[in-house]
Image (cartoon, rainbow, N blue to C red):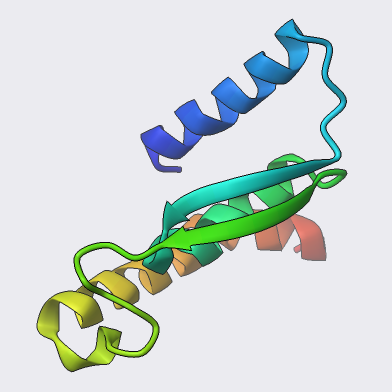
Length: 97
């Protein structure tokens, strides 16, 4: 798992625990091309929380133009590859394989 995501999830747990918060809904603000993987990770870590995603457009890569540049294509497919690689063990556990 990406070290930055582990740090984010750890911070999320710390803030909730330190303040005695029962979090029911949370907003994820992240790079647009990273939003799916980020949401999946948080949903797995906190299944009882409802998440809203606020994708931020950066590097001028949007859902409408990502495939029109090498950089956009590489970033989106890089995320797709990380989704496939990162969730293999989790999906196996879920399917009891």
